[in-house]
Image (cartoon, rainbow, N blue to C red; front, side):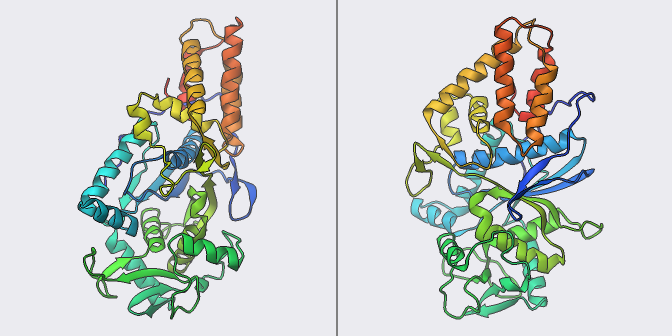
Length: 414
């Protein structure tokens, strides 16, 4: 599947040093230093295309855009893979509700997502892969689980024994009570009769009337959610031909994916590849609206495309989302967007001046902020302080160099 258009990313002048990146790791609950490498592999879970891109999506993909930008600034190659869950119950339910073909609905929302990502200046993935096109990979991955003795049948549906992975549970660190509650809320079936363990994950669902179906060695049907990401990640970020200890360097998404999705896809990947799945697990916080959780059920989703259609500057949206730490849950409001628009305009005005405050220290501070767990609020604060210094008549800076650095590191095109 095609991604969105490539972006030009200005290079930092060589005199600017990029320190080793420190990043909070969900699995260890600690901030770890990322080992310096010439090539990094990143897998980020994509959308289920049954609705437009909302600010929660945007915040998540902006987080990993910052990560990619910083790693690229070190001179490393970044192989970045993102999936699209273009076959899933919510998509089929929405299509049935609206009386449209599920594939046409998916395609329309994927196209809108591409447009939103391009407008927000987010680096496109190296591989943008839909589950439907990856079905042979998914079937092959399930076959490997079966060959390893890690699957069993319940009424012709195939399940994965999560505890076949001895490290199951070490990424999410939940009690069984909390895990069971989340599993039931997020698409799992802990109470299904016939399962060996309440947390065992569905990998192949036998055909249901009037639903899409694919042929496989396990009968006609379609895959479960978690195995889709396992199969796509292991194929497109293949480490079987090298000595990498882990299958991927970074597994990422929103914090709502920690369990069950990332826990279970990591467990399946471990059985398939024989390697621990990710060296680092990175998760972005959730976005709310005016004091409430943002969700489809509450009808309070804020869509990126709608904000842009109403006249919002995409760079102001980006600035507003950057003005909080990526791991923090954040309440969106019209006021934060208005403030961001004013601040973006102030930066543009100052960058257009011939004489500006010194910029060398500002770029150094932006780099230092991002190297410390992608601290974008600190980076924006450095830019605000520079604007104030320029307003106060300080000189000696290079506006063009600062503009390029802001674009390169923060993705804000001015």
